[in-house]
Amino acid sequence: MAERRVTVGWPEGLHARPASVFVRAATATGVPVTIARPGGAPVNAASMLAVLTLGARGGDEVVLAVSTQDAEAALERLATLVRDGLDELPAA
Image (cartoon, rainbow, N blue to C red):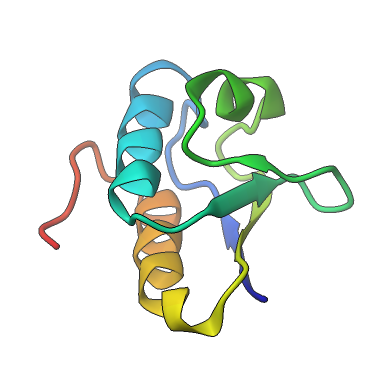
């Protein structure tokens, strides 16, 4: 398992549009990715409802994880998206 701790860069946090961008990016990786608050239960990063229930705000830390080492590139791409608060999906 590989994981990254990252600070949410979107000022409004992971809700509405930012969560939608994140969920689309997580789905596009093609690998199972989870997201959690530190110490909390991980949820499916490809589920809009699950991501919204985290209540992650701007400046909060989240933990992204994948179950296989070969998914490391996907994990890094999602970590960059969350940290930098991009409004659109970066090019693959």
